[in-house]
Length: 495
Image (cartoon, rainbow, N blue to C red; front, side):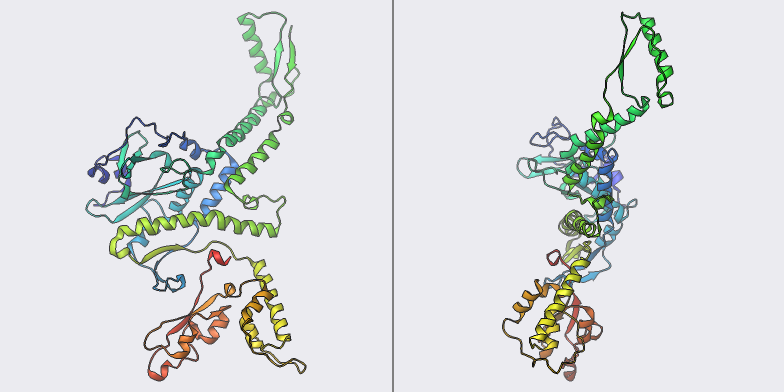
């Protein structure tokens, strides 16, 4: 019967305990790296619930990562992503879709993303059956409860998990998946933006507490009551109690004070003097800077327009969401799938690119392509060839009586078109012909291999329904068409 992680972490008779591993001295301070770098991982995790700006950044990024669609694919011999075949039934896919009884994939990814954004570390513990090495469950574990155990010969001998009751449990290397932003001085741990922000985050929290206490103290600055002579203990207690009864609390704000044999001395510190509004705004900028988080994505509206808002969304997806997803993909492909043995070979997990299309850029490219086509046709090049070269769909063309005779493309045709467009023609092509080269492939289909089309309409004109080239001659010999068109995956290099 499979043991859940709960049992594995709270029961010393765990799978990890069956194979003892040498561990470093228990005298090594918990939460301190091998090279002596002081850490406060728990404080980094707690910071999310203490500062609003930090919460907004971590929450929005983690939810964006959790909302990305994943799939399992069988690799193609060509090595091209568009040639892969999607796998819809596999134990690894079932595990990733439902990591354990209490976590869906989205909650699992979101929890791990929170840990990595706050501490630079994301830990997964694999639960297995006692009699099998196949993974049955995945559990996210708090970074402050995990400690790598260095080994002088093998670099790493295992991990130590510290439970809520302080009990330490040994875990083997193969039972843990560790995703991290590498620490520059400690190869066993990760580093996150919050480590560089703890002082600034404290300042934000303290300024908020000062403002809170300011209003609890009648919204008045503090001061001193001077008396001409020393007070006895009963007189001192009586003065303090009367003052508190009459002036403490917001309800008693601005009441006139009557002092017997005393003088009020104002300390003269106000919110304006302390410049807390400027301090909190500055701290927001420091936090956004550490994460590289675009200002429009926080919901700010000042100095934000449609243009920089769209740019901020693309920057957020490309430089914050994608790198973390790529780290998860590497962990799935290189640490989880190998645990499935032969059934996991030739497979790979991948995610749908979350970077939104640049509509404005595509509109600009369409304008430049149209201008380039007009110039080339005006110079006498064949209209059909021009449309194909610049990546525009076929358009019926009626040649004007005064138009020059069509010219054949020269050797510098592609370079001339690219120069007119100011971009790479091939990068804009979204559909590609894939030909299966075997003994039955016909000449026209073989020549089509690798041909690019701008859009689906253009591609399906030659390949109705996506397959079967209209000029294929294989049917004359009783063979099916050997080529089809597939949509090229949008890669980060195309952006």
